[in-house]
Picture 1: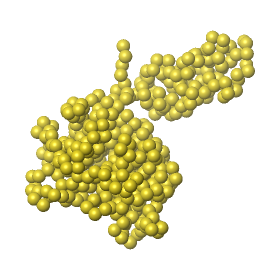
Picture 2 (picture 1 turned 135 degrees about the vertical axis):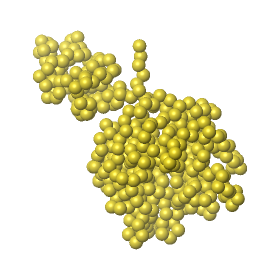
Picture 3 (picture 1 turned 180 degrees about the vertical axis):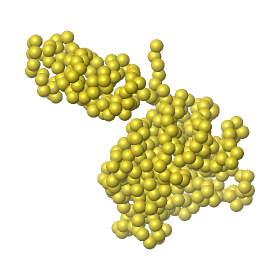
Length: 451
């Protein structure tokens, strides 16, 4: 209750705290504490005079955690006493609606050149993981065989998602509460396809259907991509009767919105990588070695069902020797109007999107960065971009490139776990999945300190 001088008093678990409306405003209007400043919500706004000056809000919660959170609102810094369990503090922050403030104090805006290793999480299943995906809130999920293991931003594991022995092909987040999983159809089972699951409970919320000529068909779903501006979900699809192509579904309704059938000479149903390009309103599709002998990369325009740009090594693959460079991963960089690729020697290459006849401009880096240990299992390199930075995994490290010429500026590496088989960036974190020890690393940017 605010007095004439704007002071507000709390009784939290029997301990008295006094603060100001200005401090509570830092919590934000959508938080519990910030809502106290809203006259339409405040049930005691009619108290006046001496009663208002002596009034207090009673909250039956931990006073020690409240003191830490109140100090965070006053100073913008988080100081956790050594005897206070962090998860207890996070639980209290969730109650007050202050998780965003806590996360902002724990780690800063993502910067690949300032990342620090903050945790390594061991998996619960033997063998290699398939993929790791970062969630928008700082959590992640790991696809592993027919299972998907889900972790929240505190890295606590939730109930795993089981597909009953169906092989998981890809996984991705619609939002912090919804995970889309694609799976391989089992022979004679009529299953496979894709569905959206709850990240907290693991329950199936919706199963996506594919219809061809008004008939629902079973299918294998592969690579995923999400359209951020038009709320679409894209997935590579393979049906039993050569129904190959890219399926499109509405994120809100879950209904099929379109299907781009595979034209001759374009490998779409087996695509390894899909990426929606907001600026061009088209989808990049890449089918790469070793899934296919002839690599194909194309841009699809769903408005006129056309392939508006494509590149392939089919013209030269017949004479390729074992020493020739094979494209193993690709990512579109809209700002530079190019597609970055990486080969088996971990060299980066760039293809100009402004030309249909251009080749790959390779930039060798393996001699500078290759640190493969003897007898270490190799993994195919992966690429990602974030905030104008380019990331490429190689053996047990991830290289960061910046600037118009993509100069190597830093390398992320740890001492055990084997080669990196996949990595993902999201929620201001980078997650790297290792092949040998079934463990993933968590990298964060430390908050900036102002003096």
